[in-house]
Length: 91
Image 1 (cartoon, rainbow, N blue to C red):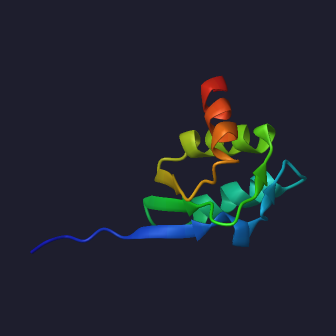
Image 2: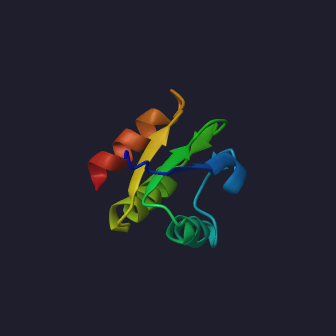
Image 3: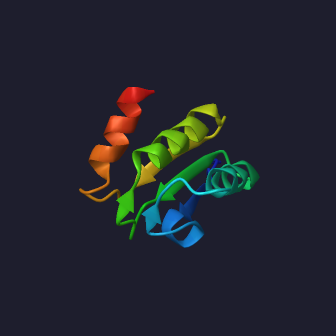
């Protein structure tokens, strides 16, 4: 018998916004959402995200690294990817 794992997909644009900036409670909402997902593997889908602040990216990556879950990102636009890379290098 083959065991199947479940991967949960969260669309960050639908959860937060298409313009991801550090605003009051946004990081707490994102962290709470990730922690409350009952699966160990999560895909964060960045479809439709048009912009992201470096501060948001750093906080998002901090949540990702603190979590015990496997979190992967998909559909990061060419405009947002350099910001994520810069945030990753600064951690």
